[in-house]
Length: 91
Image (cartoon, rainbow, N blue to C red; front, side, top):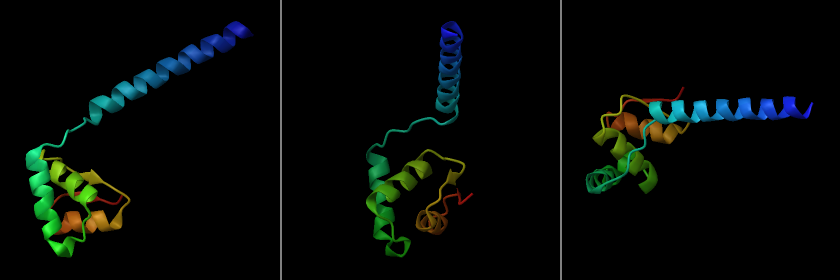
């Protein structure tokens, strides 16, 4: 019984590793640089977007890196993205 439990843990461990490796390949990480902060500042200055700093920076990074589509559950972020012509989905 103990060996079976150990085998199950090892198999689950491999599944987790496989999942995280796949997620990292399909979801790269982008580090913000000066151009991202500059664009975020421009986005914030468009008061009709209602953006706060963090959301503005996320949209700026997406814009500067030509991200095809942003998925969010944040309605205000999606509305701001639309105003800024950044593809966004609430699905």
